[in-house]
Length: 158
Length: 172
Image (cartoon, rainbow over all chains, first blue to last red; front, side, top):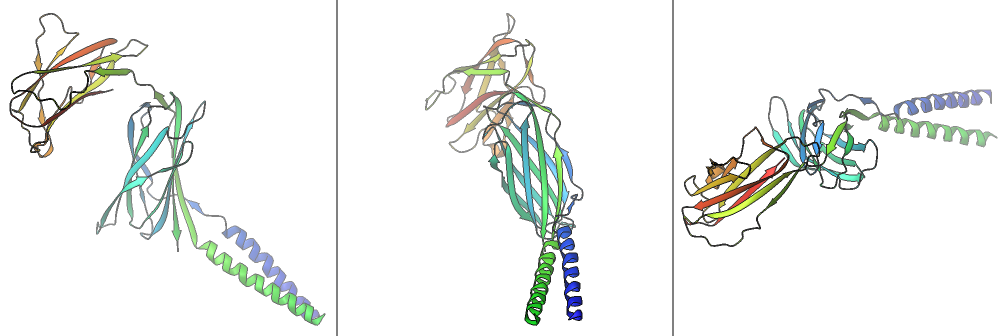
């Protein structure tokens, strides 16, 4: 009887330790993407109805297939953004070192999930990645002060 | 009581195994992420408005007979300052996708010109695969548009038969 209680106590203790371990592991590890570098940003002044290019580079540290999530959040300092005010498209150039294979994905079309929040989800496997993006302003964008926040997230699916 | 304890133990062991599996799966997902935030960006309305002659469409013209059209640019900047403008002229020949610099001459006349001003000939550049010729009015240096309006009159003279399409436009 005492021995069984001891075993049960041990199991409960192990369970508590596992729960602690699990809650720790469930937190995604947000490390930085290696060599993430915005080569060309956006100009400080933009004109309504115009388009602007930006360019960024990053490394896939393991040269294996990863899920890529790119989001652009656009906010206006004093007011709201309407659907379709901005659109985002681009081309992804990927290659390995030494360049064995060079792939061009030119169908990077972002979906506007909500007003001013655009997203693209895809996957690539090469080590070197260059993403060229074109931000287009519709003729109906309201003049004002805007901030553009671009986030790239890579997720390995081992 | 004995049966009850055994059942509890089994449940506990089952829970531990399930949690171990969950832990293994969760630990295999790794995310790395970077964020870039722009400085404050000013979005401004265009300071240039453009009007032009009506579209010239399906028109048969004789060689060496000039075709006239115009483009009016208006600097709407309320600060009354100059605006940089690029003016482009593109001409295609769809009959055989070939056009040479000798096939057409385009001249322009600026309404702000001082008296005695003459027509000036546009110097075209041969486009890719000889399918078109084009002209960037001022290359990398934009034409500085004074406050107010400027009307540019164009005179195009075609020298050889063909099916031509031209585009003339201004970009701030």
